[in-house]
Image (cartoon, rainbow, N blue to C red; front, side, top):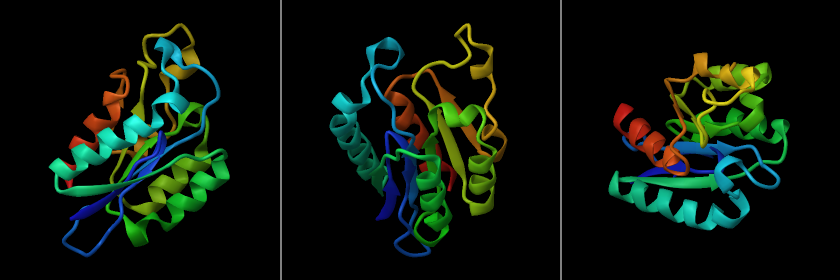
Length: 160
């Protein structure tokens, strides 16, 4: 079985051997409410369960983590190629300005799917319409709420 790491904002998938698929999912930590009354702290356990259940259906496994700093995300992603076959990341606001994160994701040489819970293109804040990490990702999923992670997991599992 493949190993996948899932985090509310960032996830990594564990590589168990060369034939197995692994995917990380990583998230930047958030405080308070997100648009649409989603609260990560209240839903994290349920989300992890749903991602683990879907991963089992896809014959992969997941590992979930949440980070409170950009440096912690970078540290984790730099180790990803040793353990995982892909990355699912919701970098929150870091998606819009973190060239450090962009370089780190690109340097892993792993397929990465960027996730946004809300539709970042529907809001009035123009800066949210651009992601600096999207060009180093194989795809971006935005606006499907918590199901965005499941869609990313499906995409990554079927890509590799």
